[in-house]
Length: 604
Image 1 (cartoon, one colour):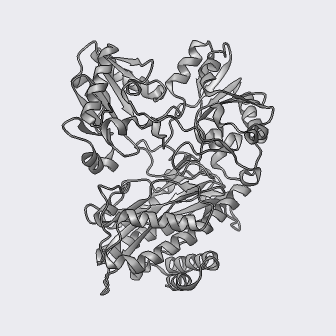
Image 2 (cartoon, rainbow, N blue to C red):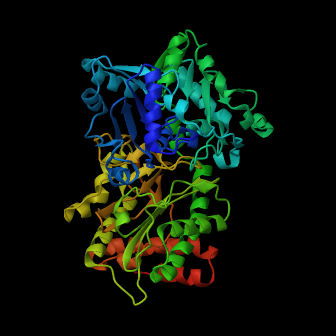
């Protein structure tokens, strides 16, 4: 008999902990690769608590339980998780270590799954727990897996070849680059657990994880340019074997731990952000000399080559036409008040699929009406779904995965009433300030060596002038038919734990440009394009300078613009941007869609 209630699941977990003579367990949203999105088999936190967000964790003892989420999910966690079962805790303000000390007795053994946490995470928690007499214990197997009766199996989908035409470089060239790095570092091998790094290194893709086209696997790359791919046999096709060639040995995924244990005396590198404790433990047990260094594929993957850049442009052109068709449909149909958030998201995906070659959405579409738009990471579901009210702001943040590239775009639009209506002065003021910040990032010119933390304030300055701000980063890296959130680069306020803000920007990096504003319970605004980092040709320049080139081409809603707040230069930017939208998207449209685009891209 399946346990359908979260109360029953929590009780079953506690019984399993008692059986193992443990006093608690930590439950993250994570998989063995520290992926942003995880397969259904790894959704342990959702199964236990009902929480559907993409970040957070729970801690369960024999007598207490709590769920920890950041400010993005303060509302959502209260809607989805029973407060009678789990205390609500906010991070980073509330510490897991402090909570464990408050609810545990001296001598308590709190378990964690060593395949779901990094070394640094465990070390930090041990430092907090040990003074209180609490011992952190790596579990031999995940106790939730022992009580999750209908737990899905990991995906068995076949891995596919990502062609050299789209990748721009052969896997052999990439492996040779990694081999050079290993030699320079005095290392014998590097363990590559991050799924998108594996996909990039070997020029393969998959469909094992929602929104990210990767195949569940591990790689050990060696200093002679060879590599071992550990992957379930059913995922390997003759085409994949031929593509990988003799220099890549294909081994069963369940041989990975044994391979780590057979590297006695070898000097091996593991990425501290993606290499879980289980990998380090296996290397140590086998006598390897391991060290933590950033995965050498991460920066190389972020700097796109000419083929990847062209692929992005092709994908963005197709995506821009689909989103434009959607916005025209929304303008015509939404004023009747009969379109809800889920229906709008489904319609947008339908337009993307109609344009062909869409493999997946690049994340769950944020289809946010009215007050929901004030939640930057809102995720609509059957319980939260509402009709899009006429006479309100609607925000849609969405993207597609195409073999040529990954897209991510946010547009904020005014939903009219049948009688005709206007946004409030406050809405237009805030929208225009967000637009001004967006333009400043797009037009930024900066010397080589600049990082994302140094330019973040350009996007916020006009909001700051009005005494307001937004609580998320301004930009994240984007992959090439890979992760929609890709490091190491990031545009955000420096410090405060914002990973990537100190990473130097390089030509070829793709980032989002997405300032916003959110008025709780009323409306939210975000304008997001993807941009390509490019070299700037400046007469008399003393050194190398960079800037951004927009990749996303969809009209920006002029009904929400207060033209009096724009400078002549900003108006010129908007007119030039819309002219480029018309140039790229118009040939793909016809009839009423084309007429709408021409109207929306006319000079301001």
